[in-house]
Amino acid sequence: MAQSPIKLIPEKSLEKAVDILKAIGHHDRLQIVNILMKDECQVGVLVDILGKEESLISQQLSRLRLRGIVKSRRDGNKVYYSFANNSIKKIVKSIISES
Image 1: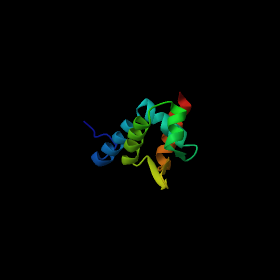
Image 2 (image 1 turned 180 degrees about the vertical axis):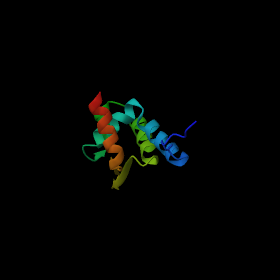
Image 3 (image 1 turned 45 degrees about the vertical axis):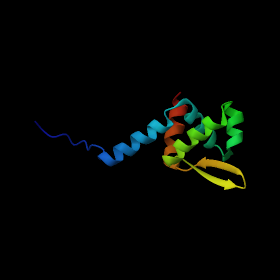
Image 4 (image 1 turned 135 degrees about the vertical axis):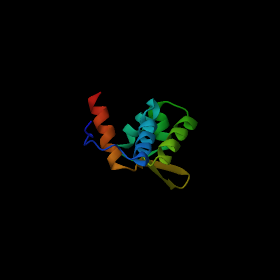
């Protein structure tokens, strides 16, 4: 039997990709990502837009930040979030445009 010329994804890269897809594969997190693709946003604004509890939004933002999808900056007592990874932005745009 001939060997296939197809190269498999290295395990480390595969795990990272799966983590990222899991992170954006949630209704609230995908909506947050969609909003942040357009501009930086303060947590309170996300709460107002999504109509969810601040604790839930903060929890979802934390998961996205840990995966390197979003980044945060503090200005006084306000925390602002923005998109951190342009490669992931391209993936999300593609997914959303196909819907």
